[in-house]
Length: 488
Image (cartoon, rainbow, N blue to C red; front, top):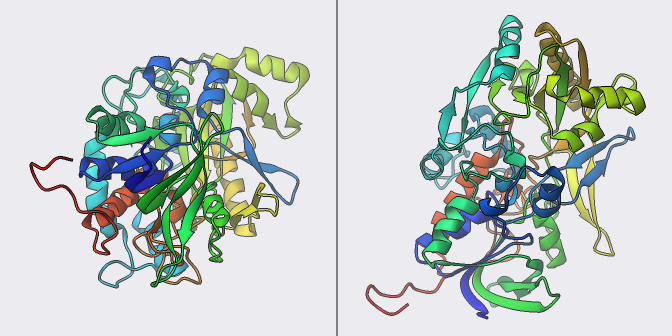
């Protein structure tokens, strides 16, 4: 088994999968390490419990001061959360990116405040590779609620998604796309490079730490240590290490590796969401759609309410039954039985709320993880406003009863944010650690302030930008490519 590479990438989701695929396609010698297994469309079925076991991280929680929790959901498989997400493809709004400079002093290559325009070419490339398209093929459940959104002055718009025409609107995106219509990093960037023999992938590999050694010009990363599925320990050497294990896990890897920048693990944004369900007289079959079919952007910005509503969706039966609540608290007993029996009659919206990065990732003295979230009054106001609007729109659409879930997070961002100021950021404008040369972060951890929209497209754009920077190799970190015609 080889133990030396140009680049080792830790994590294969929206960040790591893109970095590894892009560099491999450019001829760089790349090893991609993924904690989860390598599952493909051949094994994807709409079996909720099996998918939760095979593809998801076990549920993790942040306990809130009021006794409630935020539940973290994410993918633990090749492709990461892109394998089990809804493939919504939205660019960051100018107002979102304008917050980045203020957060950590982030500037572009010209030394000017970083803007959304600096990501434009990278967005273009990602959208071209993934085949992003507008989805106007709305099913009945969306048509039911659309007039209510319009009447309340917040009309629905069609989403753009990285799905192709093979999408059957079966609603099983979160169990893995059985037709490969959903374009995860697993079946695009990674699969393309693997098929051409350009990339080495090792799944079920638990990276414990980055190897850091002293050098005349300061500490530098020289590789990683990981444990395989048999419990055997391995050391891999590389000219560059890219940690892209996700915003909950990347700071843990860095802290276990001895880094102590105060921004590592801080400024975590959770982009909290809750599902709000309405019960209708007629079947809505909201489980038989591509899960996020349309969205209302009227309240997107902080001054307009600070939330986005996506429609329509519903969780599969296990998650639906175990998360329902109303004014009286969690549903139980006969009330729950009656609700689940009416599963086909429920239709839901997803309320995503802007937060202000008041979370953190902590590694305790025993190596255990802990997540802390402390929503401030303005964030609670946004959460309440999003729930209130969701209830109003469902009732205006004809719902006879409304229930909702607790808070969840599928869009964690910002725990190793990039910026020019080492006191307020963990990595520089190129994603390189302020403390350790040759060590880069390449995932949602980079985002200095949480976006108001689904972040996967932005994470991929940032990863594309990082891959281009690494391939240009202005710092001389990578081995020279073989000359044309020479043996590789």
